Length: 157
Image (tube, rainbow, N blue to C red; front, side, top):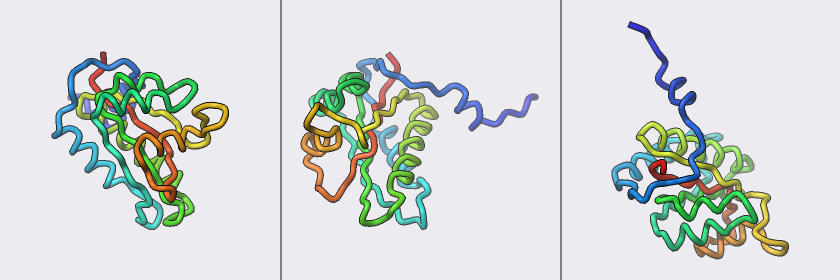
């Protein structure tokens, strides 16, 4: 019997999924992703993040417009996870939020879901508005938070 490392196998099969089926993501699977993200490591265990989970098709459509390109696939995602950090809590919030983002993606893969990362920080919505400010407006997020990424999740289409 061959002894395989399941984590390495997970890394080998994971790929970005930008086309999703219409099948809803079960609440139990959303809870598993939430738990995994909350267990993500962070510098000095400060956990300077806030996560926003949405299964609303209307919110997904709005978030799909957050950048000039690269976010349009979100309109088909059955779950959008917006990962934010609080720079007042930690100077390495970007790194901590990035770790939580990949934990979300690997967890999704491990439970049969596909995902794709949308970079928001330092990207533009249009010539005048940052992608971050657009996402903050869509979700009504407080000014103190910085938006790192959005993870689109769902069953591969």
